[in-house]
Length: 430
Image (cartoon, rainbow, N blue to C red; front, side):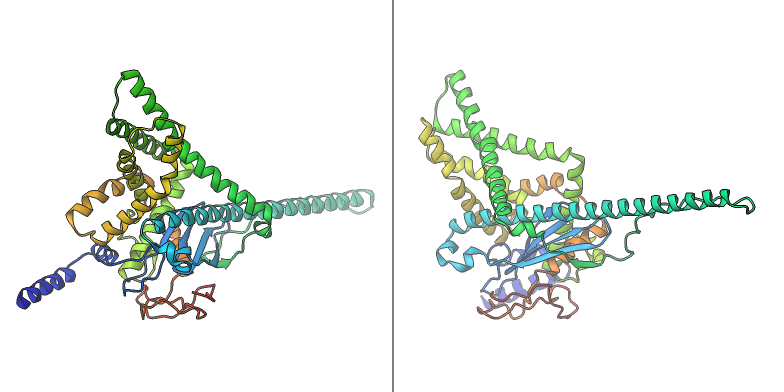
């Protein structure tokens, strides 16, 4: 028996010697994990999560979240702050299914904050550029008027014909820096007042409510209409039709936003985020050159998660049959956090057994959908994702959770260079 185990171990080692970088990243990704952006206690690798934003990428680590944005000047604006997941603060929230719903709410909150930050950086930079151009234009007009006065004075004097003074050309905006300088840019001061926080909460609630109406309530009403018109009945058939309509709505939504030209840039940053995380999981140095060989599709993508939610909802709703009144319909909506929790556990399970055929078959549709939501990024877009990830990385050796009160050191363990550079923000309580 021991000889068989030794042979299997040798075969596994031989296979690893010939695996590609993507296969290595997939194998390490399939090791036991402890949620997105959490540091496991069982010796497994840390797995980082992220999101594409306007001209940038947000990354989430075990105790920090950072957003990096490309400014019109070419510099990289970055903001990092501490963030301890609720699942690490309260033992109850770490229970299966519950942790999935909590993670979904936290991801929505962090995603909207990152979007607001990226939009604010872009607006402030454009406003500053416009103010600088306006000031330069005003100064040019003053110089032109002064030159005209000099010409008039010369005309009234007895001196020979004066030489006309050409008007000064307005100053041109400075060229972008040759290198991508990283600069810490905090959110606007208004982001901390109660009005902004209330607006952020309102935006999140509105987005969540709109998703419920579009992907759950309208399909439910359409299914009721179809069943009544055809005179058919049955809980299983009802939920199958309802689920098919929901999935069609979701796919139509993804396809529709992909037609929007501005979204292509976001999808490119989405691909940059995935490539950067693949590099981290493969233990390679974080450089745009190393990122080129990795795919833009990642098995832990939020797009895949949403598709899983759509499918799991069909199975869960089948248990309760066809809703017969408004209370039953509202009960289905109340089940959405539970469905999200089940979907989260499914993603963890399929990740752990990602090398098995059944797991690859089940995760295949989500990866195929990423052909729409991710695009090949440029090197400068990968630079943004790398800057964001470096701001949240923690040292992975030894693989132990940092005790409370001790700072987490941001290292370059994934970089393979052995350097010990720290992130812009030290964590005071991990």
